[in-house]
Length: 177
Image 1 (cartoon, rainbow, N blue to C red):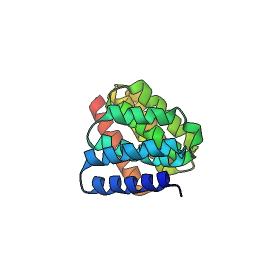
Image 2 (cartoon, helix red, strand yellow; image 1 turned 30 degrees about the vertical axis):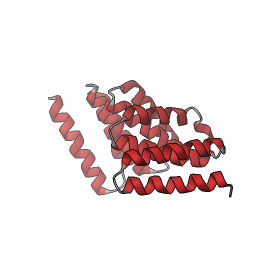
Image 3 (cartoon, rainbow, N blue to C red; image 1 turned 45 degrees about the vertical axis):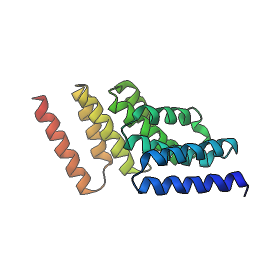
Image 4 (cartoon, rainbow, N blue to C red; image 1 turned 90 degrees about the horizontal axis):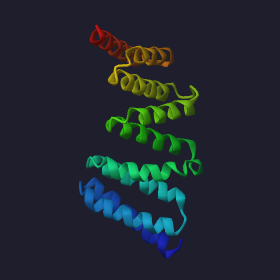
């Protein structure tokens, strides 16, 4: 292990400690230094790991702009990450755009996320369909929202999820009337 790599690991652990202690600003500084080192080493797996830590820190402070900037940088080279890492990046971007009321981009990322699952993980598929349903309901596209809820119902496996979906659909239906 090179000296730079060892130093980056130590800084990374310092960032983790500071974050756990509630010192998010200090953690951001540590992770940022760590990120520079990993980029100089072309260690993209570690770049991703540290970048996602930074995203978590920025989101915990309500700084969506900085989180989105990091995620968009990761999104530009999405193909170099494994499927799970790609899904994490895409989900974060969908959520951030939804919170920013940029529904077209949120929908694009949610659909990209949904297309990536191909029904292999029913729980995740249900979560994405519910996000899409809420997005459509928020922009008063009620029929499409109900359609997404119905799709989620057909995928859902456990009773608790099915019950929650039915309650959300009933709430939406009442708000339409």
